[in-house]
Length: 265
Image 1 (cartoon, helix red, strand yellow):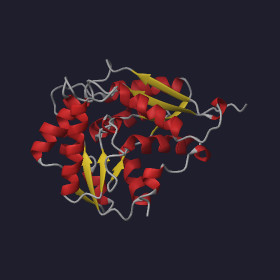
Image 2: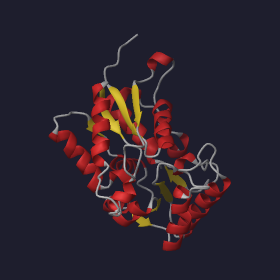
Image 3: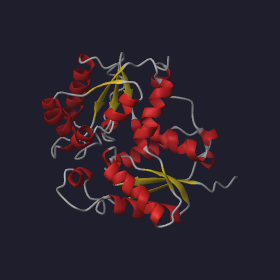
Image 4: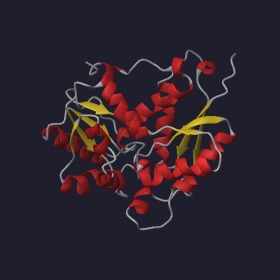
């Protein structure tokens, strides 16, 4: 039995189920025939320590969640993590993500943060050059800061986003509503959340999208793959899982899932 000395770190709590989803996708994306062939993964989930990202970005608090995130990354490094990913698109806003990296550099820590949004855009450039128009679904903060739109357009994609009413009353409520939203209930996802998400995706398809980025890590938790045969749904959590494996044990990455391979052109 070989000893693997590079641990993959997962910074959880944003939301907690999204981190579990990332861990599962790391396992699913690993070439392994037995327990011992799987990779070492460490998850730390401290939702009470990390201020809501949108609350900070919309300036409703002065407390930057970056400091708690960097502290958790240091804890992961202490148990052997050489890379870490955080399954939260909003936390990749430069005001947060760059502060995490700067905090780690300033304190002399070498754990590498893998940027989920950068990895997603790079994956789409490499695997989906035939896709012309991309729709995005995300939190309001991600829309306002153009965290997906700007890099996708820089990569040569046309980008469409939902109309303002759909953003606020459909997509945002699907994520945050305390009765039926994905942060309130994901196991199982409520029928209302799934119906809202399907309507939002269809809205983007009507606006010309060839592919849709599920740009909040709760969104891929809804069962959707069998709903859209003629549209590519892009899951940044799955892409982050593959990027974390590539950064540590590149020979262990599984071939692409069928729903990407079919559209890879």
